Amino acid sequence: MPRLAVVSGTGEPGGVGFRDGAAPLAVVVTDAPLRDSDAGSVPPSCAEPAGGSDVVEAFVERGARLLGVGLDSDPMGQFETLAVGTSSYADLYDDGSSDDPVVTEVDASRVKDAVVDGIQRLTGPGVYDLTITASDPTGLGLVESVTPSGVPGARLGVEVGFDFGLAADLPSSGSDRVYRVGVILWGDEGVILGERTLILLVRGT
Image (cartoon, rainbow, N blue to C red; front, side, top):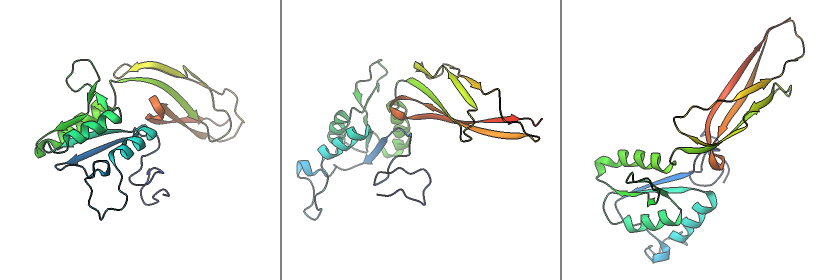
């Protein structure tokens, strides 16, 4: 399916898609059992519907994870099966072990809190292998180096720094010039953690 031109930042896959650099995560909220062709729980009018195994296969291929929020107990067993199949684990009980399927049963009034809490837990224990890239659209080689190029095992809340080596010699000009360099901070598995633009002002001679 082509990118949806009317929505900025949409991804290439069909359906809702995922933005480039986003952490692929799906939130499912329901008060009823999931219609699963693997379990034969689909009306005959549905032509070749996907089953739970298809969902797991697609999620694993994409590296996506699932957060299941049930408004009663009906979907909870299916949610747990999908969470286990997609390795959607986190530390739900604050015992230091990220081995709990991220599914929860809540009252309808607490759905928002459950979704926010689940996403925060699913996005990891706050440890990332960081890399950083700088793009120079001018082709002048404005950024000659970035040190360090990456930081393994960086924890949330701990400040890390990067030094940018800038070109000392640029073509002369009688007027001031402004250059923009895009900087992207990457986490694990191609997830973008931050984007900034370096603005360089070079005074005219």
